[in-house]
Length: 491
View (tube, helix red, strand yellow):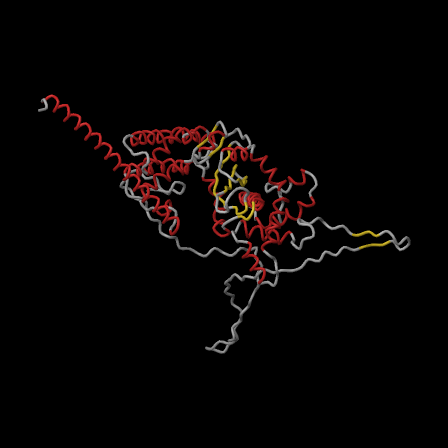
């Protein structure tokens, strides 16, 4: 028989094994629950991406939108008031539009009561918009020749201004229309080709694609000047999104390439790259040593000494938690971040020095609350859960997220870059892919110039018409500089 001491040792060993197995089982169960929650969150995101609006517009449970907050939630019980839709008069049609009058006179000319002749007593005027379909016409360039009647050898031919695309039927106006239709309005070239056919004009998709590449080459001097000005900016926003390029050396047609955006206030530039690597980012930013504002993607960390984070991204992680159900910690975070944005709304028109003081006095205490709450919630939270990922992002990005209060010029988020890249993302849904690397690079140039023109408040079609007309004849840097959006004079 076993001794009592040996039995006790075996029992203790057995209890230790059971305890260890129980811990392993509990951890496995916890990991599986976290995995299920992440799958559910991914499914919700997929459904909203496929069928619905973005979560930030859709989630009624949140207290305020990060950059559209109308009220500051001071208590949990306080609800945002629903604004009644204002009724009012229709906005008048622009006075600059051409008017065509249609006059209607009463058939009755005498009074039915006493037979007196009716006299003019005023008029009622109402207006409608008339749409006139696109009008196509042919411009004939007639160059007169003069010949010497005596020697009969010398002939002088009148010069003609250089064309944007030599020996092409495309005028500056046509090229501008195609460029804006594709890169500002997101119309694929094959649809434009069909539209021209309805006007009895045959312009193939291949021809238009070639024209766009050549227009991109034409505007390269302008893009170079804009890049020089961009690198003088005190800070640059940067972001990236995917693009599919079918004919890319060494890659499958289905593989991902990238379109990067750099924005410095009113200058927006796009750059195509076959990868999302640090090397690709370094090539694009080219040693820019000032402040870079990003969404926290790791490759940016080595690009500059000073980097700011994005509170919109931080908030988005907690919104995703709320999309999967009520969560007190996530809700409190959203409320606190909304307070930061409310302060930004209040001081948006203040000068930088005053804005910095307000941030130090008002935003800094709120940031301290957010940090304390994040540190508290991190304890015991599964890192791989959707709430754990939100807390982890905030913790890892914290030094970058709080940097904006140090300077009144700095923005609170990277939304300007996201807003700049959105037209490309919308257009991508229509045209789906680029055929070649050359086409992708051309798109980058044209997208950037159009977005910069829009940021300056100019009409893209009018601007492009003018530069397509003048650039081929510009011979000096000074002449090209006069065609920059900030300098050009448009009728």
